[in-house]
Image 1 (tube, rainbow, N blue to C red):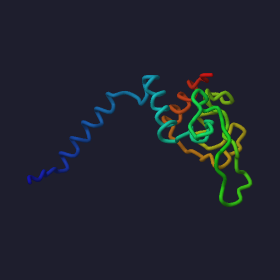
Image 2 (cartoon, helix red, strand yellow):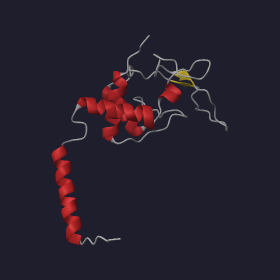
Image 3 (cartoon, rainbow, N blue to C red):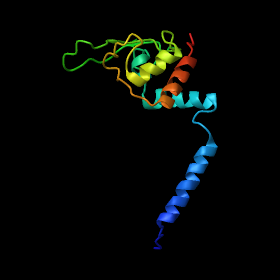
Image 4 (tube, one colour):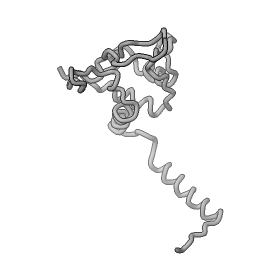
Length: 145
């Protein structure tokens, strides 16, 4: 088995090429559709927002066309939690938030009034790019009734 020996100079050269490639690629999400797609990925595959914010039918499947329209939570805390929210709010289109308020919400975990989210909603501390992508995606979600 051959071994590759890299000296400090080789690592520096590779790092320089990677830095140049990153700078030529442009800013993250320069294309608005790429930002929305990244937001969709974060909402649907990472944060799994539908699990709480979308209603389910009798058999537990999501009700098609009512994604992110709010829903009663199907679980409760195992210890007393006075601030527990028993329903998740309507978030399709983010009707109660300006873009700036929504971005601040996902960065700080606080509502526009300064009140923190209620459990079980996590107090997200997302980076600005991810936050802007999530907000851009949620603003595109329209009801399909």
